[in-house]
Image (cartoon, rainbow, N blue to C red; front, side, top):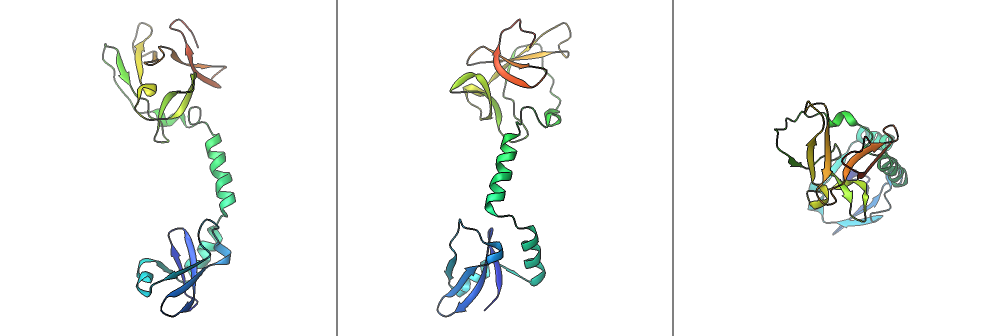
Length: 177
């Protein structure tokens, strides 16, 4: 009784032991998305992480309420992966002289695609479908100076405008965007 343990991302304390072990969430580390009280069979305690005092204090000091975690997640979502962390796009790739269809994967693990609901907008949550396929075209004398990306679904070009602040898929072949 009184033993503290971690089960996934939830922290409990043993309240009583009978046929079942009654466990309540620890108030300092409460997670409202999970039951406040759980009843475990004794052998189920073999599958949780029993915490010593030091581990408990560390968990308390590092704990963030779910509301704060959700707020941080929203802030991260607000950061546009298309405009931030561009050095993640640093993998070298050599194209041959033929047009090639590519899928552009970014550092969040998804791909760039046109927005299926509004084809002139870019979306960073793509997979490998038709909206995420781009034809690489070489523009200029030296093919390593500039390439353009034309979406295979709309035949519009990926375009960066407004001094690098805006990205869309509204470009025409002769745009300087």
